Amino acid sequence: MAWILPAVTAGVWVVSKLFGSRDSDPNPTYAAIEARRWAELERDRAIRDLDGMKAQVAQLVQSMQEMQCRTLQFQQEATSAAATAQQRTQEQMRAMVEAERAANAARFAAESAARLATEDSKKKAREAEAERQRTQAALEEAQRAAEASKQDAKRLQRAAEEEKKKADEAIAKSEAARKAAEKDVREATAAKEDAERQLREGIQPVLTPTPQEILAAQAKIQYQENLFHFAVAGRAGGGKSSLINAFRGLSNRAAGSARTGVTETTLTVGRYPDPDERCQHVWYDLPGAGTLKIPDWQYFNAQGLYVFDCIIVLFDNRFTHTDIAILLNGRRFKIPTYIVRSKADQHIRNIMKEMGYESDDEDRSQRLTLYMAAREQLVDETRRNVKANLAEANLPDQKVYVVSSSCLRAVAKGEQPSRAIDEIQLLNDLYTEAQARRVRHESEGLST
Image (tube, rainbow, N blue to C red; front, side, top):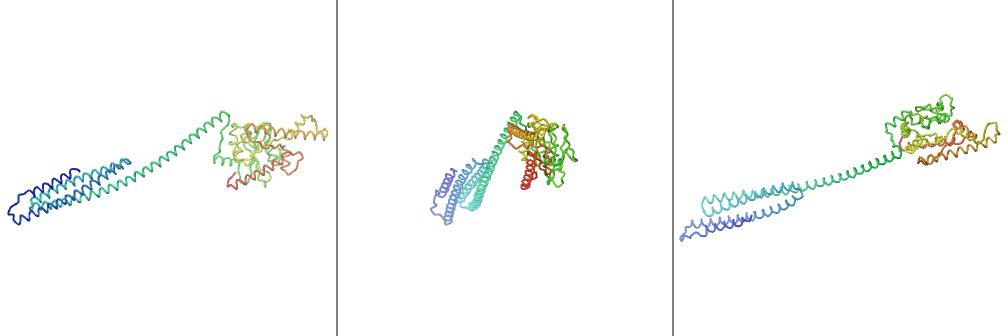
């Protein structure tokens, strides 16, 4: 824009030359004097208008330069927005150039009009004024466009800031997702390593029944909320059926009793309600683990033991893998488990024979002494054996109940047999714990 000043100055010089260097007529007429005075006035007014327009143009140029600086600064933060603003600024600059050109043309027309001082010059002056007004209008339009461009720049800046905020949020979410994925990978890796370790150590996986499997298991045993369901598990031929008959107060040959035999006769779960309809106990004879083609660690879930109120595990001399799986899963599902050593009368008689007992014809006092010694030996050996087996299986110690079917049957019928060992305590513990567990579940709003 440096050329504006010299150009205006040159124009003033030309006008002065035209009007100032003319030879003075020694005898000018009045019309000539008035024409000259009018031309000088027109010249002065044209020069003032040009000076005003020059100041406006200079101010607008300065404003455009400042706006261009702000636009360039914004361009560093939002390239696309700056490009748009720059384009608009360039258009405004072109408009300014056009305005300056128009102003120069108006100035030239005004100078011509002042120089000629004729009707034609007046016409040119009017045209110049009209052109000045159009130029002024163009300047105002350019100012409005500049303000609109400024507002657009602010809007684009806000949009850029909003996009940056969204990008930051997306980055934060991505980082959280990455950390969660890394955590899942670590957990999966740890689970894989733990599974491999368990496989190397012979530890079987933990199986959790689905809700559908729980409902199916309940339907299989005819589960009822108002009844207590007791499962009896153990090796084949371990006396489960005889024990269930004793719990119900029945002999092995009584009507409705569970089938008994030397070899395993139970291949499916047997359901045996108490013969007293007022009693809410139902007993279940489970197949011996050795009679089914089921891995030991699948026995608990396969038989649906997770739906019972209590589980009784018959123990002989050593825990089987199935016994250990039942005890482990019982703790996992918070189902009370009871370790029972049955056939106590037979075991005591065998120990008495090892001590020298031969016949019931021997002295009653001697027979009772041998009986008490054999009973104590059986109980002590059984408890030590169970404790050692539990420790070997990494299970906490728990009580073992030593019972015989005949004494247990008498207790179930309300009698007080003289040779009872743990029969009374077993029944009391079973019923008390089952009732307590049911109350806990009802208070928690759960079903067993």
